Length: 99
Image (cartoon, rainbow, N blue to C red; front, side, top):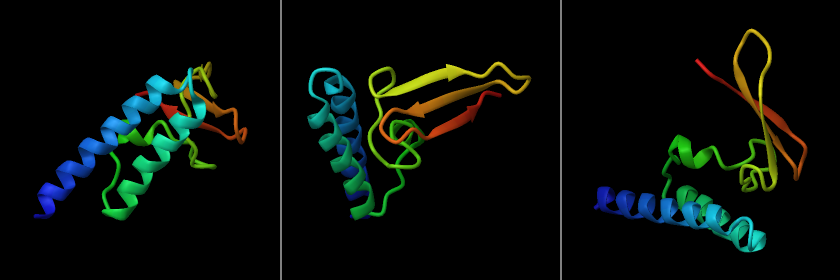
């Protein structure tokens, strides 16, 4: 029973995030709503979002950020190669180290 619920919840989260990414440029309010519903599904059924789905949320304000639309992505120029992602809503910048 739990595996069925887990599978359905994962599918719905994936569908919602995919449609939020496609709607981000045309209808930003709808995309924010879809992403928040996906986040609510994960908390309701106590399912950890996979990394590719978690990546589209700001670490500070928890809002949906679409690359190039309401966030800025830069490559680090130091000896440690990293990607810097800046949220245009709250201004928070976080880094992902490239191995």
